[in-house]
Amino acid sequence: MRNLTELEQYMVLVERLVQIADKDDLAECAKLLAMNVAHYE
View 1: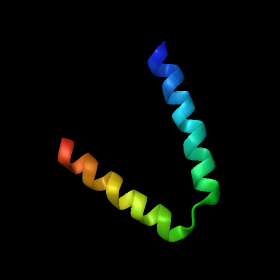
View 2 (view 1 turned 45 degrees about the vertical axis):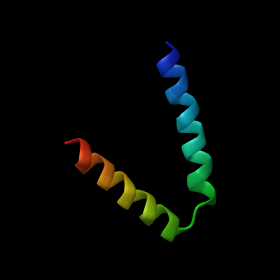
View 3 (view 1 turned 180 degrees about the horizontal axis):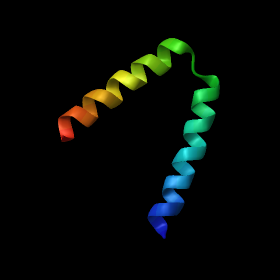
View 4 (view 1 turned 90 degrees about the vertical axis):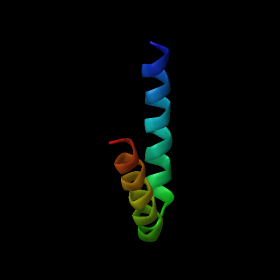
């Protein structure tokens, strides 16, 4: 279950970062995520 615990910790971190990030930061993050997803498809 280490992976599930690690995922839960990352989700908590994501929630904190979303609360302090501004719109431009979130847009840049979405672009990077899209590029990574496209790379692995």
